[in-house]
Length: 101
Image (cartoon, rainbow, N blue to C red; front, side, top):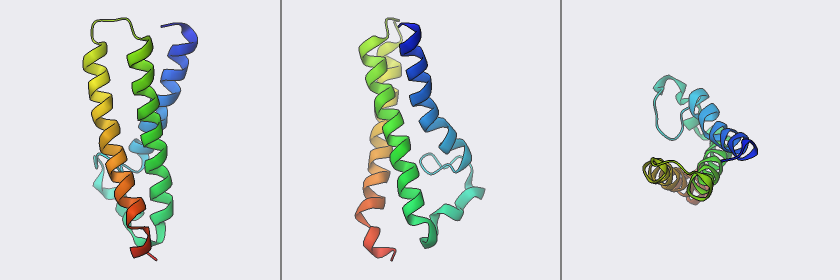
């Protein structure tokens, strides 16, 4: 990977890691930040999960296309699984948007 590709991969991974560390909507690592799950913050939570999904999906594409190391498949499949999980959470949030109003 070139330096520019590594920078973009870092940006895309940061799109997942920063919101996950602050609010933890996908993995649920920090349950004390559950205030986003109330009905008042449904639109905000949907946007946060979409940004996380977008970051994971673009990171997966970058790893599969440009990585040249032998762990590419394992990292790519892991990111693809996380991306699928993030899309599932986003779909549930978006599909139930009318229940929250």
